[in-house]
Length: 239
Image (cartoon, rainbow, N blue to C red; front, side, top):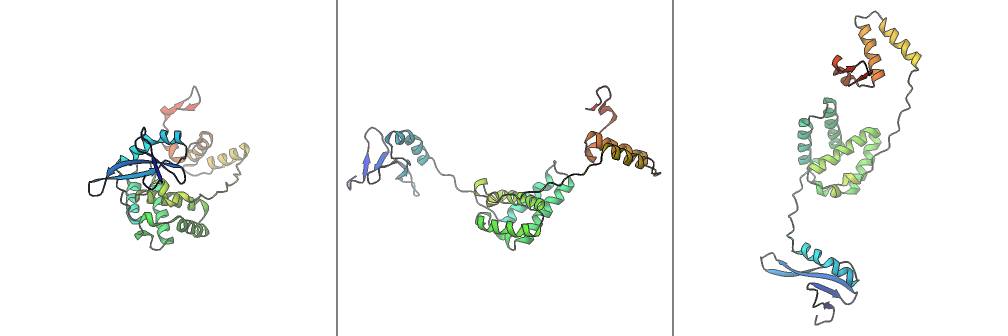
């Protein structure tokens, strides 16, 4: 250049070096706002000539590729509406899970006045950190973690990508596992026998169900779906 600050290379069109600091740049003509081409440049983030040559082609392609307009980000309420609809239409959710998810979002709204009218991209990490701290003072760790998952989903449905979503910057709380005190085999047998001879109309069925749940590891709803044809008596297993 006339001022001596920029050096160009005849054999590498579009490659420039900023002489004062030795950094390399890519230069390309791109469509301007009025449709006329304009010259723009971008750093290749290196002061090594061979590295700059290797990066030049992709950087010029990047400069000439039209930028996609940024998707419009909605408010928390917009995200919540989509979240509520998804919660109601998901076939893999049990009714108790639907109630839980709705309860989480209700508690979030009550704990953060004005959150529903906030645009998702205006919610900062610092605000999320403060909310999480205050929320943890009021609710148990498992519910805090569940609410945080819901918060993440709502903001995502409002239009935020993962890296833009401040809820993903919040670390889930640790949950202490309760120490289980299970009965011994003899104790369990006595419990079952007590159930079986309790005199109730369904005492035998209740005892059989308790035994089946304990020995199979099935949940109550899973046990309801087991039929006689599912039992392989030769292999002593449920198929």
